[in-house]
Amino acid sequence: MRKIVISALIGGAAFAGIAGAQLAPTSAASSVQVTTPAGRSDDAGGSNPVVIELFTSQGCSSCPPADLLARRLAKDDSLLVITRPVTYWDRLGWKDTLAREDNTRLQRAYADKGHEGAGVYTPQIVVNGGGGAVGSRENDIRSLVRRADRAGPLITTATDAGGQISITISGKSDYMAGVSLIALSSSETVRIGCGENGGRTLHYVNVVKAERNLGSWRGRPMRLAISPEDLNISGADRYAIVVQRPGAGAIVAAKLLDI
Image 1 (cartoon, rainbow, N blue to C red):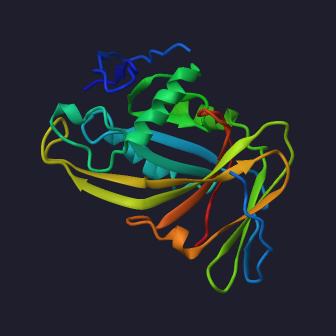
Image 2 (cartoon, rainbow, N blue to C red; image 1 turned 90 degrees about the horizontal axis):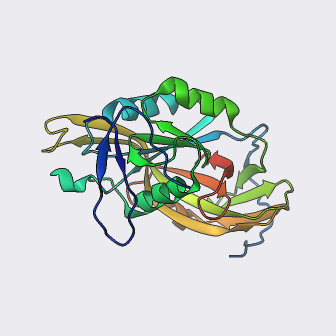
C-alpha cells in the first residue's frame, strides 16, 4: 500500500483513502507546589530534545520502514521518539493491538493546523507538534529536526528516597502550555495475523500506553510532584514529560524521565 491520505471526518464518519506518493496537506489545572526533595538530581543542563511523534498502523504495509526508522532515531539522546498507533486502518482486516483513539484524534488536530506535511495518513512523523513528513523519509524528517526550536523552558527533576519525583519547569514566556505525563512501552513486538502485513512480525519503540495532564505552565517557573503510583501504568516502562501549547500546538519542552 502506498502512503494513503485520509480525510478527517468527525463523529465516526467513513474514511476516504487516496493513494499517492506526495503529501496532500489538509486546510488549514493548577500545579502542586512541593519542596525540592533531597536525593538523586537530574539536571537538564542543555537544550530540549526534539519530540518526534510517529503515527503508524499495523494494518498499513507502508509503515514498517517508518517503524524501523523510529527505532533507530530513538537511540539519539537529542530526540524523544513517541510512537502513536492510530485506529482508522482497523477496517482493513486487522485490528491494531496498540492503537488508541486519542492518537487518532491528536493526528486529526495536527492536520487541522495546516503545517508543512499536514494530513491524516500513515506513516507520518510530526516534529515538535509542528511540521510533518512521511514517516519513512529520513532526510525530510532530519530537515525538520534541524529547524526545530529547542529554546523553550527547561525541565529538571529530583527523586527522593521514597521514589517521589519533583519536576521543575523553568523559563519565562508570554504563552500558556499544558504539562503532560506520557507512559511509554520502550519495546513492543507484534505478530500480525492478517491484513496487509499478515504474517509479519513488527517492532515498535516508545509506544504510548497512557497520558495524564499534570497542569498548566504559565510562563514562569513552576514545580510539581509525581508519586511512585503515577509511574505504575500497565505495560509502561518509560515516562516522559511533555509541555505543549493548547489545541495540539507546538511542543516547547520535553524530557524522558530517568527512573
